[in-house]
View 1 (tube, rainbow, N blue to C red):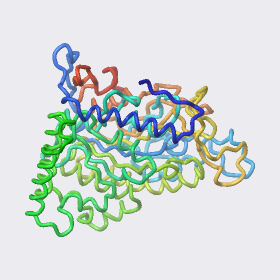
View 2 (cartoon, helix red, strand yellow; view 1 turned 45 degrees about the vertical axis):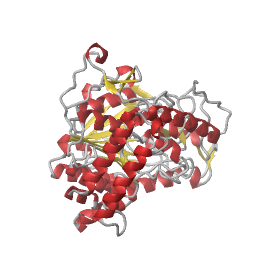
View 3 (cartoon, helix red, strand yellow; view 1 turned 135 degrees about the vertical axis):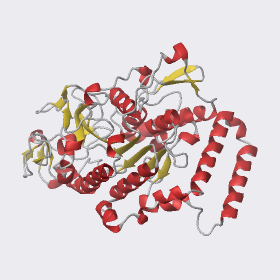
View 4 (spheres, rainbow, N blue to C red; view 1 turned 180 degrees about the vertical axis):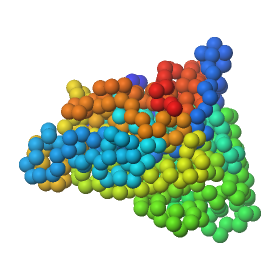
Length: 485
């Protein structure tokens, strides 16, 4: 059934319909036979490129990070009562960086000092999906496919786990840090893309919502002895094998679940699990990251990549109307988010560099879309306006900020992993509408760039129930070669 959105429908109804149809696709994938790698002519003569990165850390600014208030400053007009909304472009002044002539927004002073290690894309664009919902755009960004699909699409990290395998056979190849999947308002939507989809459980993420508690996730719970843990593992396997629902699982999916349990058991029995314990980090190092939930996630990510993790996502956490989801109190909320990300990101880059890991670790700062004071989606879009601070003139501080979802021009920052240093690519207009006017980069081509850095051809495909499915949609992704050193 085609997925259509009624622009007049309340957002909650749209989300429920979205989740219902995604859930149906997920169940279909759960019961399907396993993916078969396309070969020969089917694979379009795929040849994997030489990797410039062995690992990837995705720093996810969940909720819609406004580029004009972070990495793409425009004309700044400070707060004043009566300020016309149409004059509001950036609500923070710009500051210099370590790259001559490059400026970013005030509040990111420490990131500014490591921008000479970065490639800054200022012209990333998102598709206008008709209704600018976080759930749809986050799904699109993480999987490369617009929802819903007839199969459950794998997360980008699951592609890395499947195609490349683990760097360390003990460490999970794909780890997701900082996002609660229960009780956050849109848990079903988050679960829809935070999975391995049709690849099976063994390629899915190890979810660690609380980085300070990650060490608990790699040891038997409470006072459980090793013998009790082994017995419980054996009983669980028996339940899977004898469950009345076992016939709903394909042999591939059932075996994948059992292999995932084998992997977990191997980790629980390994000394490498100490990488999950940020309490073992020296005090001075720990303090540098201990400014926020996200900061502690960055420390954990660094430790896990050091220990051999392949793909780690760290999120500021998407929760409706919190963090980067600045529908109201935009300026004050972004000022807080600056404080939460600035020091940890800068320290992560410097720590990776000092350990000799940055050159082969691709670190990405990204979000599902940007924000604007006036425009929802892109100019001419009929998308329903989600902003709650809808005024013509700023009369109080809660109105001061960028409240509307904007897909016409977004910033992405990339460090290490074979990317150029101190390089800016693309441009957005200086006056509204702030759309990409030079070298626009689609999600498909951005993914192709990330995959190429990791040594995966953007045309890599698998056969799913007799139909080809590619890592970039229809195998059309093209890496932005200008970004590579």
